[in-house]
Length: 135
Image 1: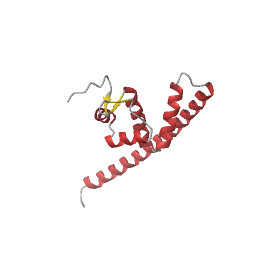
Image 2: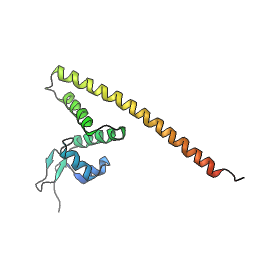
Image 3: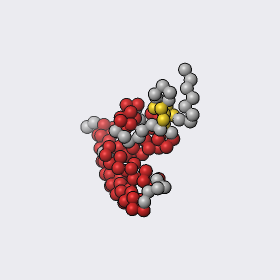
Image 4: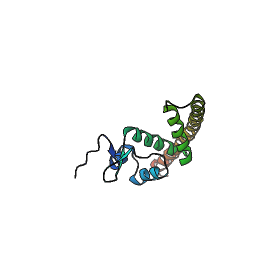
């Protein structure tokens, strides 16, 4: 059965592109993080390239430990900055939010880098111990 999606991507294609599971994408829809831009005549979720980009932002935030509420807050700030009808006050508040997220992301990424360095050091130690000649 062939369905013309008019440039939209079906959820399976979105899952492949975003490296997120179908279940996760559906959950993000249910909690209001990323809702499909359209539905097929059969009721299937259809996503635009912009929807996929939102999912990629969410995916990138996950390893940094951002909660779903924080991810929603960041996406809301991005939406305000993209909204041509937003007031100067709304835009200013959105920029403040994004700067705070940037700073949190930098701090958390640095912690991850340190954890990775520790893990590599440990792996090197184990390699040295297993490759050392027995006495």
